[in-house]
Structure formats: C-alpha cells, structure tokens
Image 1 (cartoon, rainbow, N blue to C red):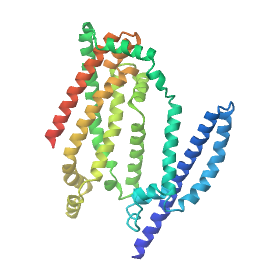
Image 2: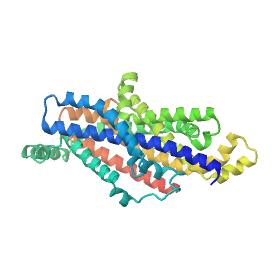
Image 3: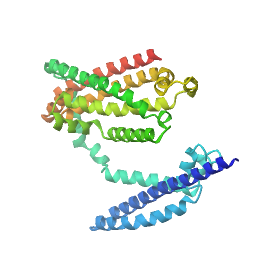
Length: 358
C-alpha cells in the first residue's frame, strides 16, 4: 500500500468517524425523545410537556457522549452506513451482511427505533380506526361519493375552460424552466466544476439554492406568489416554474455526472477549451435523457397545476375549491372526472413520447 493511499485512507477514516458520530448522535437523541414522549403520553402527566422539554437538554449531552463511544464500534449504525457507502473504506475490510448486522446489538436497536417511530406516528397522527368505520362516518362518505358519481353537466363548459388554463399553466412553467435549468445544470455538475476553488464555490452555491427551492413545496411558492403578483394563473405558473427549475437542474446535473469519461478525455486531449469540451463531449450524451426528464416534469406539472389552484394559483383548482367550499358535490364530481380524464390522457401521451425517444 503506497504512502499516498495510506494518507487517503486515514483521511477517509477520520471523516467517516465524524459522520458516523453525527448519525449515531441523531439516532440516539431521536430515540430518547420518542421514548420519553411516549412515556409521558401514556402516563398522562399534567406537566409532562414541561418535564419532557427539560429532559431534552440532558439528552443532548448524554447522546453526544454515548454516540461517540458507540461510533468506536464498527457495527454501530453510523459506521455501518458510512463505511458501506464510502468507495475507499468499503473495499478495505469485509463488511457484515445485512442479516448478520440485524442480529447484532446495533441492528436490534434499529428495529426498536423503527417500532418506536411507528408508535409515535400512530399517536401524533391521532389515528382512530373506530371513527373511520363508524356508522356516522360511513354514512357521510356514502352521501359524498353518491353525489360525486352524479356529475352536474351544466358547468362542463366552464370546467373545460378552467382545465385549458391549467394545462397552459403547466406548459408555460415547464417551457420557461427548461433553458434556465439547462444552463445551470452544467455549473451544478461536480465532474465539470471540481477544477478550481471558484468553480467549486459556484457549484456549492447553486446546489444550495436549488436544494432550498426544491425543498419548499409548490403550494408554498404559490401562496408566496399569490401575495406577490396577485391571485391567478400567473402566480401558479411562477410557482411551478421555480420548482421545475430546481427539480430539473438536479436531474440534469446528475445525468452529466454519470456521463462516459472517454469522449470527455478525448476532446480534452485535442487542446479544446472548456466550452468546446462541454459542447462536443457532454451535450451529445445528455440530449435524450434531458428530453425524457423534461417530458416527465411536464407530466408532473399537469398534476401539480390542478393542486396549486387550491391556494390561489388559478385554473381548475380554484374552481374546485369554490364548489367544495359550498358543499356542491355534484359540481365537484364533474371537476374531478374532468381532471382524471385529462391527467390520464397526458400521462398516456408522455409515456408514448418517452418510449419513442428511446
């Protein structure tokens, strides 16, 4: 083993230990939080919330120390996850199989954590199966579904007009997002931006912006733009465009990072500049996947455009919200049927187009 490789292994081991420590700390802290919450809930203590909040500070210090000690074990959950995904460390020693790891103390702890999570989720979501299958609940559901399957055809023309607006909201959002995402994706591909500190700064900055934008749901962006530019289709289009840009840049840049290095190195060997390398070695490899991703995003935007209307984004969603608020279920049924038919047609067309591309 060369000295350079030994140094790299040592560096990777230090970084892997810190990551494993952080993961183990989060798992332990969550376990303590969930367990104490369930205990106070089942004991029905009046000051349970206050006591629980005070314990969180103690858990913080305790989990940092225990997480550090636990991370020293190769079988700890953090070490197991980090080292199995590290390209340098996973080949140095034989990793335990999943079945063997599940039988270890760390595996048993992980299973207990999963069970605890399910119990906590049951309580926090206030699941009540008796309410779901009660006579009163089933009676209300029967009345609504009976109304939905008897559509009011008198509003069909108005519904179709709103549906056309919805389709064009999705279309314009996709079209406007494509060129911005196309250009940005080259600056968000690590294999093209790892050659200088300034390039890495641009790469990390754009990644942060795109991840933040994508983490905020289109419904939230629709609310923001409804306040900004007013309620209507323009606000909905802007919300979908912004989210489409973030989603497409992720898909596009990941495709660039997975290209074949052969053509890239061949063009670089001729003395071509960076722009020529990208244009002649990268672009030909990504055109077909880009088209497929774009059509897929257009398909998603059709569905999302019907939803953002519920918060002022215009289109058929606004019409649906109005009739739902008035409890006019026959009209709601008409709108739902039209949405289902249009979405099915768009899904069929997009599937055929993607199939034709490949």
